[in-house]
Every structure is written in structure tokens, then in C-alpha cells.
Length: 427
Image (cartoon, rainbow, N blue to C red; front, side, top):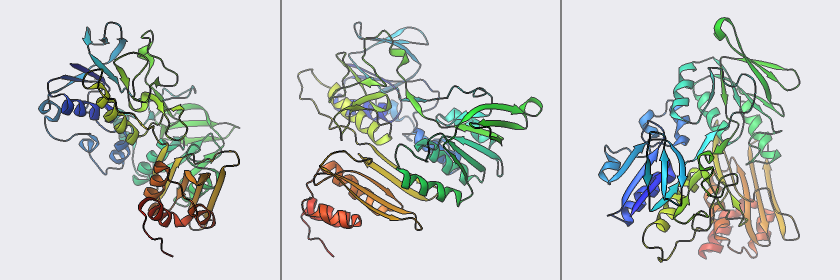
């Protein structure tokens, strides 16, 4: 059996290792289009903060790890897929045949169509090459404009603050972290960042970037919506990512925002699977298809896809339960998390519990459907994170504990212990 995996991120690496374990005699080829060893993009901010070296971003650290497992690591870019011929085309020339194919090509940083976005010193923060370009311009006291205050932007902000740069955040939404926090949480995060010297501009956007000084050596002028302007020596764009699906044009593989996959992570083309940021698959909370571009989902996708790729077509197949929308983030020391349907549901079955300590930067919001916890936000409350996730993923009926949580949402640990483990609640 010839297994080919396109993409050497977490989904691809875990799939390759799982396939090797399940099929010791099969040929496993992992194709990546970057010159570095397989690495984690989520580790790049730690590299910029000088908490790790480049090798600290690598997914596997043993010398000859892949060779020792009999996994061929090929550096090339895939330009097309032919499910009928069961081949992939390579930019370096020729093609590669497969019996089973996994597409785990991830995402690329999106750049808004703004004049000046292509100037040197206007960087994204998505690859190791990006990180090197940013690090070359970093020095204490330099002014940085960070475009975007979403999940990726706030991770980058943590690294910039660690290097003592003067940071201004520009976010077009009315609040920070608009896709993982409501107005209350977004306001708290902005206030927290401002108290630590970060300037926050929400509800506006950059409309143009111009290099200033001889040869652009003095930095940049950024025009904002409404006529205001900022100056900076470094600009970092963190305005989102887009799944890498362009090379699939004409392949017959169904795509929308990403590659459409079923509960076995298989595409509409036989023997072709997808995993990670590029896969648009079942959502745990809604049952609809969604992209959850987070590393835990990518890792689980890779494992499940490999289980279903290995062995004969008549094998029992492993069903994927669906990915849970889940984000846990540390922004300058303030930990925030969101899970599932944190924005709530509509209808008679909906209920919400809220506890706010604005001065103490603590916030908890629980969302219910009947007596089941379906979503939550937590800010400044790290002890609740694992328990909340467990209650949502177990879909346990809370019974009388629903009313107790509506009265005091901080009792989630007691509810978890009694409803999932049968332990006597205390207090």
C-alpha cells in the first residue's frame, strides 16, 4: 500500500506515524513545501519571544526521526491531484502515485487588499521565514502596528510585548477577539492590554501603508479609516488565514471554504482524505460542516484519517465525532477561553448563566440547551477550563445542577464531579 500525505504540519505528521504503526509494510511519503523540518506554527510566537530556538518549534526532535520510521520526507510543492489516475503532480517535476491520499495542506496567511501591503517590513507571522523577517526588525522601543486582534493576533501580541516593543493594535471589529469573546470579554481584554502599555484601536482598519524616509528607512505611515494615521518601524498583519485549496482546481475534490469531508474524514473522491486546517468537516456542536483551525483538531484529524486509510476497504471504519470549537489563549498574562456554542442558542430551550468581576478581570458565561451545557466563555478563570470542556463534550444531563449553575456558574467543578463521576458535591 502506497500512502501519500500532502502537508507536513501536525495533522500530516501524526497521520504518517499512525499509518506506519498500523501498516509496517506500507510505503509512507510525507510531502512538505517548506525547507525546514516539520514544525508547529503555534510555536512561532515563543520563538519571537526568545523562549525557544528554531529547533523548539520542530514537531519531532530526534535525529533521523522520520527515516528511522521508514517515512520518506519529500520537500516539494504539489500542483495538482488526479483522483482518477491516483497521482499527484509535483512542482519539482514528475508525479507521485498513491493508493490512499491525505491532504493536510493547512492554511496560508491572508493579506487584505490594501495599498502598501507588499512593502518590505510589512510582514505576516505564519511561517519560520516570516518569523526571521520579523525578528530582524525587532528591537526594544521600536514602534509596531499589529493589524488584527483575533486569536493569531493576540498570540503575536504576547511575543511583541515580551520583547519590549511599543505596540498599537488595529482591529476592524468593535472588540478584540471578536470570534471567541463577546462584548464583555472583549472589553476586559482591551482594558487589560491598555493597562500594560498596549494601544488598542478597535472599530477601525488600515486603509493604506506608505514607506517614509529615504528608501523607506524611517518606517511606515499607516492611514486609518476616518483620516487618522499611525507611524511604525514594523507592521505585522494577522488578519486571518485561508485554507490551501487552490491546487485542487479541476481535481473533482469538493470544496467550499475548505475541503469537504464526511464523518470518516474522506472526501467525495474515493481513497482521498483531508485533515487539519484545510478540512471542512463535522462540527461537534451543530453537526454542520465547519473549519476549526486549531492544533488539537488537526492532531485528532490526522489520527482518525490514518485509521480509516489503513487496511482493506471493507475494514471497520472509525467515525469522527466532530470537532469542538475551542480556543484557549494567554494575552499578556490574562487567560481567556471559549468553547462550543459560546454565543448561545435561540429558543425556549436556551438558558444562560453569567458572573462578572470587571475590576478583577474575571468573567464566566455558561450557555445551556435544556439541561446540557453547550457553550462557555471564561476569562481569568483557568481552573474552569478543563471542567467546562468535559461537560460540553460529554453532553451530560445536568439535572438539578442546571439551576444551581444558573444561580452560581462558578460551581462547575461540583457539577462535573457529581454528574460525570457520581462524586458527592460539596458546599
